[in-house]
Length: 137
Length: 145
Image 1 (cartoon, rainbow over the protein chains, first blue to last red):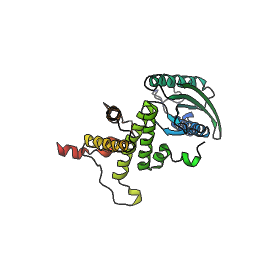
Image 2 (image 1 turned 90 degrees about the vertical axis):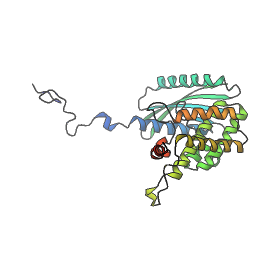
Image 3 (image 1 turned 30 degrees about the vertical axis):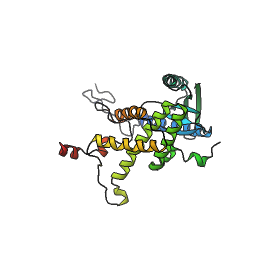
Image 4 (image 1 turned 180 degrees about the vertical axis):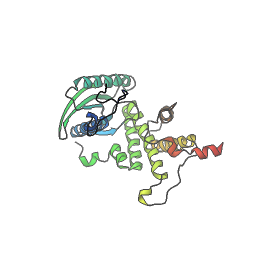
């Protein structure tokens, strides 16, 4: 018996002509991630924070600081097209908080602002941003 | 409040714009401030950025730019990894000395950490912006042997 999408021998034929996979019409995860980081960076700069670095290798996505260099924000950004981002933001703040916990041992005089920012990209010009932060001294 | 014009001069922006010499000096100053504040983590972050900026400078200076129709420059610049690491170490050391933030112990620790990230064991890619192969000649290395 011949089934749709399969050859007579039972092998998948792939997509039929003009068939569009959901993957083809959705932006890539990298694009969504980059867009979210850009929006989060704009938000933090609008809060008078100054970008200092994107750490090399492991670590938070960004390090921001204030004008006087009295505190440093460790920023992790999560972005998605889905409405359900709160769990990912909570997970991110937990990761950053653990990271800061290790730093406090060596840096008793520094104030770290652990921030997790969730960006929901609804359409090309409609974003929602959720920010959760814990200040660690 | 810092004006937007001043923010454009942060080491992050200088590096992003390709003003590597200025970015290197700006990160050295941030390193010195972090040393003063006791922010060891920020010291490490600034050190890593200096390492990365020097790599980017070498890559810019020694790679060819065919699109600009200019004569290709000699690549790569270093006979082996040790020569590259020594050159980077000299570059960072002189910048830190200039801002009076050079501490031999910290320098050794941060340089060791950067070296480990730049030359990861196995097949992992370097965490930095520039690959080793772009700066260290396999051919020259073979000839040396």
